[in-house]
Each structure stands twice: as C-alpha cells, then as structure tokens.
Image (tube, rainbow, N blue to C red):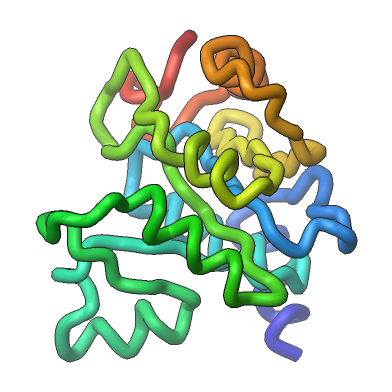
Length: 183
C-alpha cells in the first residue's frame, strides 16, 4: 500500500517518473546520485527506492542523528558517520559490505549541495575495496526524472572510470540548476 501511495504522490502530484531500475542480482553497490543541489534530493531518493522496492541506504553526518530526527534518519536507512574521528572512512564503510547480504549505499560524490568542479573520490575507493559496482543515478529536475543507469564495474583506472561515470550526468539539471555538476 505504501508503494502505491508513494507512486501516486511522486507521479501524479509531483509529476516525476523513474527511468530504469536496479537489477535484482546487484545486492551490493554504491549508488551515486548526481546532481546534489538541494535537500529535496533526499526525498526523491526515498520516493524512488520505495517505488522500486529496493533497499538503498546512506551515511550522513552524525549530527543529524540526534533526538528527535535521529529516529527518522535511521528509519529511512541512514547510518551515522563521525566525520571527525581519526579513522579511514573508506575502510570503515567498505567493511559494512562484508557483513551485509544486501547493502546499496547512496552517496553524492559532490559532497555538498554547493557548486563543485570536482567530485570527491571516496565512493570510488569504497567500491573498489568492497569489490562492488557503481550505479549512476541522475536527479534531473528539468525533465522530472530519476534515472537509474546500469551497474558500472570498475576497471581499476580511477581517472578513466570517473570520467566515464561523469558522462552519465551531462546536461542533467538539479533543483538549484546553477549548482548542477558540469564535466
């Protein structure tokens, strides 16, 4: 019932559609969502994963997980991340994949909602360390589409792989269009 309600709101009221899906055989992956220009992106992700009936998780700064909002963020699949603790974040996050049967981790490679000219690369190294694919997902506010592309398997050439991944987002406009990623 929740899926039907979410789909009605997403499609009929907001006017959005989902293009593509995550293949059922992909149980573990990094989902990169681009562009990330607004808090609305979070809700697009929540609607999309519910409509597709796919478990997709995320990590966020631990400050978001305090009372009363912490319950909401955990309920929606969030895990707190201490950004100031002196530990290797790539290793810490990659180790989560070892202990889970299904874990699809959503990450915004821009690392902020502000305009950036270069992605942070942690998502790539997490995927490499965990030996999992990356699924590029575009939040296109101009077309009102959330586009799930096919899984991309890393070659080990980070520079070339990231250039290829960035091509999935050419021309995609975020909610705050001037902050959209351009490659």
